Length: 270
Image (tube, rainbow, N blue to C red; front, side, top):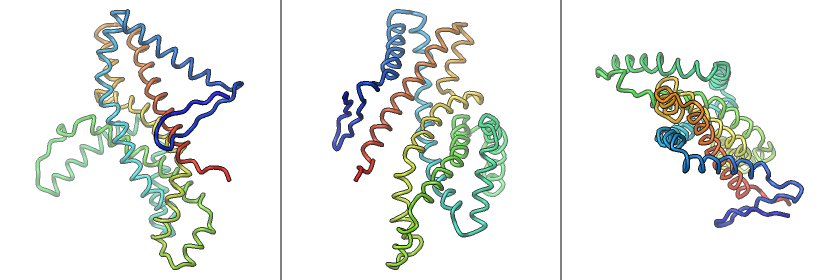
């Protein structure tokens, strides 16, 4: 037995049998190591790396900010989806099915180039202010699109999590006199969130990769910086090898952190 232990209070142990060693992890680390060697010893790769890497700041901001907001929106929509109120349930289902039926790149264009300008005009007419559409940066527009898009998918995750809670526990809450809101807050949601953690982790990783799509509206994240550098230097190989390995490094690090955290919050077998 080979044990990979990540330190920390109450740390979880990720174990691999000898016949199931994480060879994939060794290969991935090897690829990342090749990038480090290339950056250190090749001027071309080094230049590409330092031209692209400033875009990581916006990539991480978009990932973290969009995920937090989409989690909040998704929770509200997910609760509405399982609500006994037909209007709320129908509105939530319409939103989910509509967003899931639109390609993400089309959704980004629609939000950034249509809905945000129209929203600014509507706000100006109501408030009497004169806010310019151009004052809303394309990074903000891309973030809004990511939030609204992923809220639909996360809502379905929460819906499944809420419905996975045993009905006996809900009935027990009613039996002791808890209101529907109290049951949702103290019984259903804590278990639902725990049950949906793996799916939410997958959505977080997918969102981080999909931040690359906001490059189509000139938001200066990693992919946009890579495209600008490649267009000016014509170094296609160096540019996109660096870009791929940066994304692989980010997703690998996030996957390992999520796996560790999932092990910490897992309910031990009884």
